[in-house]
Image 1: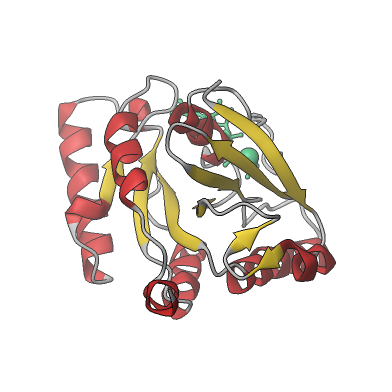
Image 2 (image 1 turned 90 degrees about the vertical axis):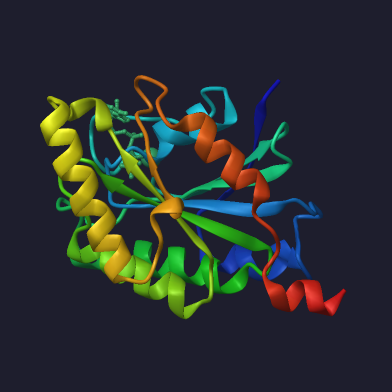
Amino acid sequence: MAAEFLWTLADASQLASAFNGALLNGRPEGRVAFVGRSNVGKSSLINRVVGSKVAQTSAQPGKTRALHFYDWLDGKKIVVDLPGYGFAKQSKDDRDSWAALISDYIEADPGLECAIVLIDARNGPTAKDYEAIDFLRSESIPMLFAITKIDQWKNQSERAKRKREVETAIGELGYGSELIFFTSAEKGLGVRELQAEIRKAAPPTEMQEGR
Ligand SMILES: Nc1nc2c(ncn2[C@@H]2O[C@H](COP(=O)(O)OP(=O)(O)OP(=O)(O)O)[C@@H](O)[C@H]2O)c(=O)[nH]1
Ligand SMILES: [Mg+2]
């Protein structure tokens, strides 16, 4: 089996007992979190990356409501499916508590090696994406960027224009184009390249120094 479900984090009160140093519930594998607005395709891309349909996907935004952890056996990583942000139908209280749960987890996990920031091919980075990137940067989490649903690009000229726009926007934040992956979970595009890069993720420097 390529992947299996490990754990759900639904409430920040579960965090205190989950970590022992870099171990997550006794597990040493580094964590890789998929971050992005609701409906951008996080769960779908996770299923492609880990090679089995472990994460639930839906055409309705707001499908993933807690944090779900999957053991990606071949990649020797734990993959984290986060709830999406910017889900318009949520009440403000719901939005705040979801955002708090995500940021509490990111702050609490010393073994979070990398965040994959997903950006919809049709919109480019939104204001919420910029906020998420700022937060991850402030926590010193290395980032990769996955542009999702590139099968929605209609032709070669749209593809070229959109690629340039995304590379410029992310470049302006100080991240090189080698960190950007153009993907389609539907067609399986860009998945192999992203898998290879995720495998390379290493523990944050402070942890390595502590060994
Ligand atoms: N065309 C196309 N549709 C996709 C692709 N990836 C995901 N989708 C569709 O986008 C919708 C949302 O996908 P999910 O993977 O559930 O999105 P999510 O980011 O996990 O959403 P939340 O759990 O609500 O945060 C579903 O209808 C998917 O079928 C893709 O590569 N191409
Ligand atoms: Mg989801």
